[in-house]
Length: 436
Image (cartoon, rainbow, N blue to C red):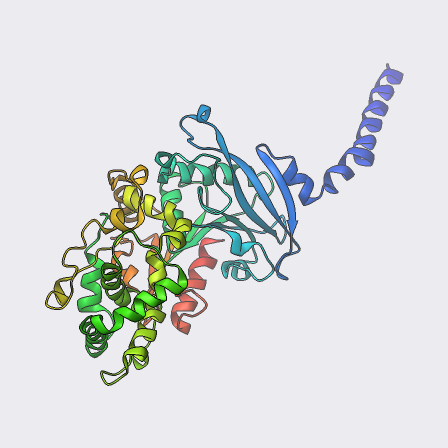
């Protein structure tokens, strides 16, 4: 009996010893590359140059359904950029709203990563950049499918990174983070969207009212408007310059150039405030036509309306017209001098083809609005005080678990790093508390 017991114990000891001798070392020694390659739905993994903050970085292509409700419709490769710090650190999950090419290099580092000592996982939005199927069905480019893409990625990479996850994004990317958090509230622990609008119609009126009545100081608003009036009044003299520019740059538009000129004038005020320009740059009334024209195009370049240039942003305008919404152009302040009197429906006219036009449905935006005001938790929203997109900033209502910070005089470039010291400290303290 004692011999039998001894043999059993000896057998157990041998098995345990073999495990520690052969199996455990292979698990511990498994590289990050091997861990990524072992995940399901991985198409390819390529090493890329990492920012010095990280130890290694990879471009990963992940198989995603074109329609998560109907996987039989096919798949596409979604590109993600993983920058590794340590397995026992959090993950900053960047939900890009557009292409992610910029993140494929040593220069890119999301500001939350050093703040939180975190890994970085950036996902290129479906149907932008290289994250496209061979044949695009625009009806599949929905908020729901994009959020399901991100949900799938979180599920995959949590097999590697088990600490806390923080979603973030800038502008449309921040909006993307909000939709993802609303639809999959438990995927991440904290969300930090930057300058993220939440629109409720295809042509929102809040932005033009903000530009007309609220942004900056009264004298600044007056100077911006007077410059627009000046450009419109000089239109006949400036049009030859405009036509020559379009010829040199090979710009082509879906409407006549004289209309594009008017659109560019109205776009000027939005662009001026969005990017935080100074009224000191505005040419005086006595400036030459060339000085006025050069400055006008510097702030409101007409390549925004160019058909070829716009191809890269076509998915955005599909989404804007279908679910995300956008801003309106208000011609009333310029009705005495502007030729193009009615700009309603301009997204269809200027940016979309017939197969890209879908009825607008605000349901996802309205659901996200309710989510932020009620059950959302640990969401930090950052906005700029003079950014027109702040006119459609998310409203936290009375939800104490959502924090909204506006950078005074901040533009669309508003971040934690460029906030005044008290606001910066509040953002950092909030994040530190939530990450405990």
